[in-house]
Image (cartoon, rainbow, N blue to C red; front, side, top):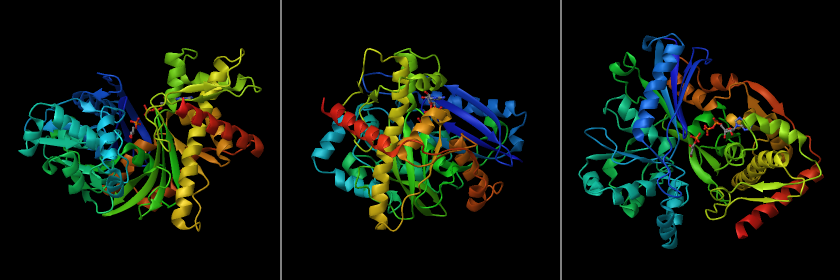
Length: 500
Ligand SMILES: Nc1ncnc2c1ncn2[C@@H]1O[C@H](COP(=O)(O)OP(=O)(O)O)[C@@H](O)[C@H]1O
Ligand SMILES: O=P(O)(O)OC[C@H](O)CO
């Protein structure tokens, strides 16, 4: 047995990636699935789509690599986080569509809980904020809105899970109801310090605790797949939420190390070691990974629109044909114009957490065109990252009493990190080096490593970290005065956007 199969169940597509003994990719299969938008601000997935694309891509990857399940040592799962599924314990049938992390339907419920003074208690336990982003209020919404759901949950007939849990349940044919600590940490129901579900929060949200999954380490025994699915019983031995898996895949194992993933959104995580650090800047405290019963914590900054701004140029404005077109356009932009784009299409995430503001563009002239828009779009991602990193650096300095500075190098990955222009600007505006690894599939790599290490095929943490290889380093080349001037203009643009 020589391969690890990583399942990466993301927001817009599902991927199955095979890694060989040397952790090299030998096959990748990908399938997109339908996004459902039943009302403004609502986003749903059909859980059967998540399951069917998982199974289909796993089979396709095996076929592509011309291997069988006999060659697969173990499976690792990584997934879109927070997305909430409730299903029937007996039939495995979901009682409602999955409510996706982006869904804002519980904004009023969150506001009411905040107004009633519950946020501090929730933040102290979970490290999160009372925001619709997280699973807890989505689960409460399903129990409140699907006829008879709460009574059935109280009777023990319904189960809750994030996407990893649901897939594990399906893969093991209902034998295992489990999740890992990183996914649990995104539910708003898990006490990240005590390492158990919070009775107080479940009582507050009226959630029967018997519907919650067992919480395990990221590298653990999550059961075996039923033989009929892939051709043999394959052990599932690694699970982590996708941003945490990327942190692992980037080998950010030392306190102070940080990574930033540029997909649809952008998620930056700073490893803070075995102590949870409470942010003074509205960042989230979360679990980066949990191994051998010991959680390692992280500060996380989440930006909702990163690569999505490029998608908007392509699909909304229709000024580019493909994402790569932004590079030549940005290079050709008029250097005398300083167009600033604040892509607050769905409000602003960390560190602002303003759900109500909407996007804006400043500094337009008669000569502003697609080139200036493309440049402003790529720059907006760099500015937003600097906002996050300033917040993180400040939190980290307060935590360490200034004795330790956060790592000055940022490790990047995700689809948009392929853009040299965007990565150079990122380095320029941060005034710090940006490292892009050889393997851009760091999320799947993280899940594969967890599974392979647990199964004895892959090296331990130090061995894995030693294998991290750089593709390119981007060093800051922008004049310091210009950097400061551009960034302060961005800050003014954000302030204006939030007040309009
Ligand atoms: N060369 C590029 N330049 C700029 N943006 C890019 C480039 N390639 C991909 N992207 C952006 O990256 C995103 C896709 O990244 P990916 O990691 O696959 O995202 P996700 O996992 O969220 O679906 C898209 O939003 C796309 O616009
Ligand atoms: O599926 P992605 O890559 O868009 O990631 C989604 C995040 O996990 C949401 O918190």
